[in-house]
Length: 218
Image: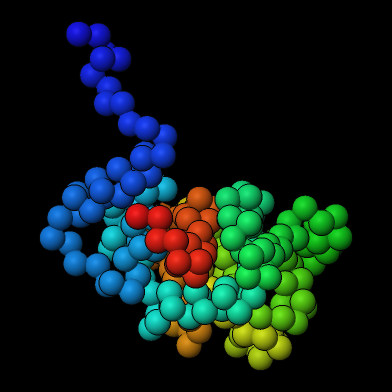
């Protein structure tokens, strides 16, 4: 028998369903909060990393709050084009929302250079200036989380975040920036520790969108 013969044939339409079956099986007796279970499983599905069953933390009713915000037409702002690209815009548009990302704006880059700050920090200021309800989705830049924290502490946001998804990945100020968000009285979903990334950020958004649309995707 050749190596290819060992592969199990699975119809394309069944791959995701089978993946979630495997995730549920491998979680075993691990008890997930039913309110957040589908979000956690979708992140595991995206990363094949079961550590997220432990390091994803949710403020009280964060998932339900995010779902209701999306149903009400809330838009999403991201810190990377990668996260923006991964979000299901078709479902988001069905509710009247859109994805905002300012990272490629020339004036953002110029302002960041002039002030000696990161583009991600400036992007959070641009998002806040939209003066509308937003879900802030951070998958790469801890400086974006720090700037959100500062603006909230300063009372500089006309519309406080409906939800903050804080999942930047890396080593420098990543853990600390996430803990700042965990200590805020603002709805949040945070991946504690060093792990995260734009793919995780998009997966969380999509899980919320599928819940909002009644499509559990499990």
